[in-house]
Image (tube, rainbow, N blue to C red; front, side, top):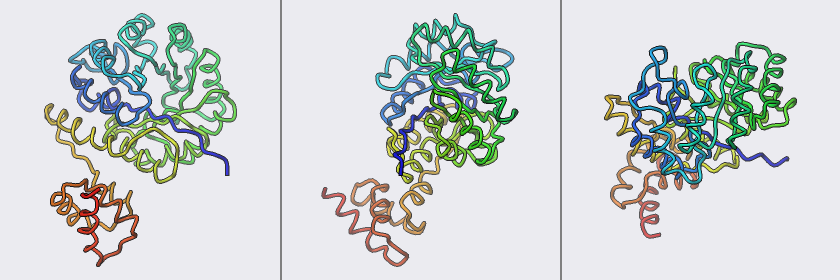
Length: 338
């Protein structure tokens, strides 16, 4: 069996997820979340207005803070993850990209409608001249056939893009369609291929997995799945699934969950949004443990001051079934003495 390629993770909480908070993430919010994501092993962290550099406008919604203040805040804490921005030609400009680079951006994703890659030439070439890691982002990829998609992707590659994405902006594709389009790019381009999923049809995770199976090595997600429409792939869930499928990546499941619960949720609540994580259910599936064990595991976690996630994972390793709840105390006690 061929060795699987390493998967590169891009988190878009602080850009696509900015739609969820009406583009109101502050520099302090951005710094806290970005630092947490870096600790969770995320390779690229995207920052800025939901519609990209200088997207703050009457058409796309005004940001409370300008892009450059949030980019600067992220740059002050990021050392290993690439600080990434989005640029839509016609909204963002080369001048804005130069300023973003000045304040600390290390990568840019240049996004066009799937049939209009030619408008990205100037911006991709300029980005490469600045030394930025540059991604070609073909939006609304469901709106054209495979042959035209390949034609447009080849343009972005010829301009100098380091990666080209099949971007499901409307969450309109199902796994077979994603697989077909990613495979076509994989077979015709020399650069790596990426996929950005939205969850409008509930297919985000499945579509990312289909993309990986078809040869994509770059995939996107956001904490709690925050994003436009029904949101993106959940970072926490994606990491859990990649772990179960033995894919090589840098993501840390526990740390991603903790950033979501301990940092992002309080920020959202401070803005009047009361969204909740579904980490308990995810962990039960990840560990393969029956749901009735959760309450007992929580109680044992508090009693022995150990992480409930470690209890659930150990229960899964022991392949417990209903009626074996007494093992929980033994496991919690054992973890507490390590």
